[in-house]
Image (cartoon, rainbow, N blue to C red; front, side, top):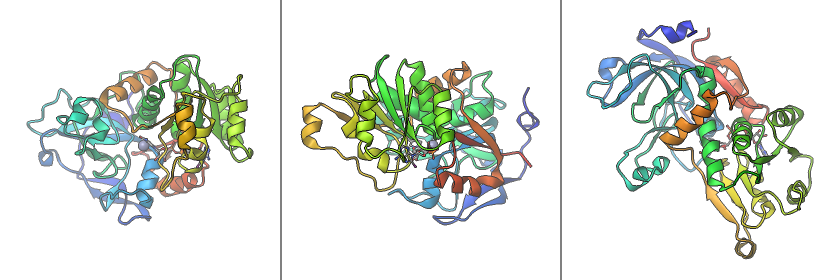
Length: 363
Ligand code: 8ID
Ligand code: ZN
């Protein structure tokens, strides 16, 4: 049954949005104008955002800790699940008013350059990012771009779809980049967080065995419930390299590490603990972090380091299909938009297990 917010497709002139005017905040919830249908450009759509996940990237953007500039003032958010309520005239799209869609991190890209043609859409030099260069999903009515909106499959509730739009697609893609095959073992530093706990589930579907690395009882319980075979609390272990090698039967270490931690520390030993011919997939984006790799041993043991940055439209569709099939279930709590500043504080101090999903229309 669609909720009242989902079935009311009328377009008001004012709405609630969470925004910040300078890096570091404060983040405030304010009443701002809604872009009206006649103001939309071709290939733009107005999406009534019903739910939005909160990603650690939103916190990085607010703090301004990456070597990139975002727009200011900025309405963050890039895991928006909602309904199309208007489409710009002369748009080349088969989307219709009333369709359920998702706003991803990649809001738009040229679709013409070599990167786009090869399916590397996030690497397009003209890519626009939701909640970074364009206002995102922490508002009730967001302008987005028809070419990059994801269709949300029937039967997948919007609150379940939201975290898949960034966290889900990102880890799904990263697991493909790991080159692992069924039966291989992967380490997931950050396993109890938003990305990490979804990575455990996609890894299971791919037939991989998971060593979860994170901290605290709640995250330990979550990881083991989701099917991680082993758990390592990074605050309780002095020698992470040894712990990871010991966690594999032959002592060689995992075949890959999908680093989803938002802190640089998780990267420090990853190149050391993966087994020969193994791969470290860099996903987490801690500010100013470096990956430690000894050139001699990287060569001698044929190790690989790859970066993995969200996914393209096809990967987003695939990641959503697994969720629609009931094989991926985000652990989330639903909160009103007004809680965003508190959620950022909890995220900053590592207290959140799984994801927080905002209900944009809760009182
Ligand atoms: O496309 C991409 N590559 C992409 C997409 C989306 C998000 C990258 N990211 C980045 C975010 O910007 C952020 O830097 O991935 C990182 C994780 O995002 P998240 O999952 O949304 O963050 P979270 O929910 O706060 O989870 C982070 C987890 O890392 C753990 C924390 O305890 C938390 O559970 N962690 C930390 I902090 N230090 C760790 C360590 N040393 C660690 N886990 C293991 N070892
Ligand atoms: Zn994200």
